[in-house]
Amino acid sequence: MRKILLVISIGGLFIQSCDNESKKVEPVIRPFPVVAAEMKDLNGFYTYPTNITGQNTNQVRSKIQGYIKEVYVEDGQKVTAGQILFRIETNVQEQNAQASKAQIGAADATISAAQANLKAAQVEIDKLTPLVEKGIISSILLETAKANYMKAQSQVSQTKANKEVANANYQGVVETIGYSIIKSPINGVVGKINARQGALVSPSDPQPITTISDVSKVYAYFSLTEKQYIDFFEQYPGKDLKEKLGIIPPIDLVLANGSTYSEKGKIETATGQIDPGTGTIQFRVAYANSTGLLSNGSSGEIKIPRSYGNVLVVPEAATFDQQGFTYVFKVINDTARAAVIEVNDRVNNYAIVSKGLEKGDIIIAAGVNTIKPGSAIKPKPANMDSIVNNIKPVF
Image (cartoon, rainbow, N blue to C red; front, side, top):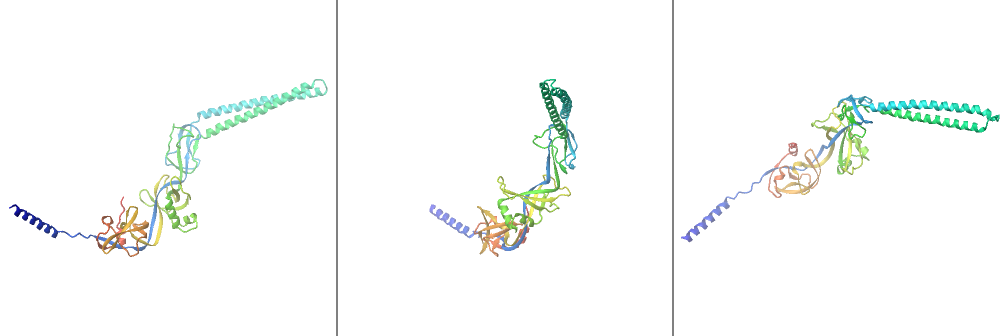
């Protein structure tokens, strides 16, 4: 009986195995959109973050130490050159001025006394001279009188010098009192006021009382890495940087809210050397600011036009990176074959290919991250522009 049951079990397993073999499902061949690599003319932008400053920004600091007594302006107020902004308390300086003025008066009195002594000495000489000539008195008396005259003359010179010192001290104190009135150095807009009435200020303060910015014209600064600078330099014709900057088209400025500024800018200058600390070169773009929309410290993005003529392109979505290389999937006999390519640039969701593909090569246009090399696919011809235009930015 056991032998019979064993034979029946083995037979059942054999039949089940045959049944499972017959039920094996063939792998599903998935459809993928494919396009042919083609030549195109592309126009796009280089985009760089930027910081904006007024064409002239001055820090306002006190030249003397003292307490702010009056504040005549407010944050954001427009001011003109020479307009009074702040007044510093000057009690100590005024006392010094009075003392210096008193010293001038004392010096005048000393000069008058010295001049009187000088005249008296001259009178004595005039009196003794004829008596000495007639031999009535000794010449020693005349020589003594002359010595007294020279001493009186020296005293007059010394007292006049003392008055000059007193005058200089007084003028210095008056000038210091003048520093108590702080005026705007330029036409512009008042920034944040960091010290208000009653605050103690001095020339050594780490931050200024405020800043004045002339924002009738503003500068947008952006930086390029060394590689970006070389690419930028080689793209535009011209014998030197100045000529190249001269032919760059007007520059758009994208504001912090995503809108494009109404005025176009112009690249005016570049540092011309690489900053060893950052490894970058800085450029400056000038924008008119008649409406006052742009302010000192604003941020945004610079958009520099760039053009490519008759270049080989594929959808950017068709590329993928792996271990430092960029790939696409070529379609050969309905099979996905990974191919290494070199991408020169990426513009408007297109990848510009410099090596690895030829015009007309069929590639998988989308979904490349779901394919394994060597997989069979069902090619589904697609329009390259439609695929590129359907790519939406992700924020």
